Image (cartoon, rainbow, N blue to C red):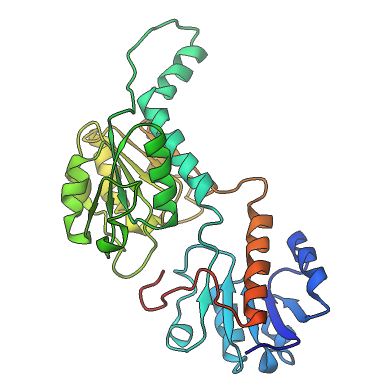
Length: 324
């Protein structure tokens, strides 16, 4: 249904610079911005759409309950684990996310992490700092195997990097038939085949969203199935990987190493043992924080808002029951 004017609630700090990008829409959009339920008391009952830009789960729940005419919710995030509360999941209100906006940079991070271990950059830096000239052998990524746990936009971005480096790619996803014709993948497996994927992969890339089915999916048994030369890279969600099992593997050096951009607890506590691991590359959940990532997310929302206003199909519609 097309409307002349869209009533839009924006859950954000009014000082966010990207909100200025919405100014050009004000002729056709009533925009209310805030971070407290009181600010939405008058606007929420007639709201058509809600943009979750920077808001707590509690605020989203409260404002959602105040907006009985809501016909669309969009989140700046790609991950949905903080948004899938029962009232929204069980409602007919469509939910979209910003999946795809951040994938390219995350794919590049995966490539960088593989090269970090393959070329032993840590050893190079250590020798440079010590003024030591020491030649050593390095690994070629060509011909190696990348195993991807969770083959969505991020997984495909990682696969594209792998193919550019001449690697073989195995992908694991809940519905493997959806990717069997994908030219970036040499083989697709179902979720029950995770141990085989871990055994065969030189680099395991975890790119799965956090859902009840994926929490702890890469557990101690899966990590234990990895090659001694294997490297685990997590760019999905922290709780998908059993951090205790991973820490044990890193300490015992039963795997070569890991690169993590996401963690169970964020920020990672200062006394966390991960900081002291010399076979771990640690990124503070910013591998997708490019110079334009926030602007890109707003541009994506504006395109989707145009679809909504014209009654066209929304982009990145989420299966709320599956969680992605």
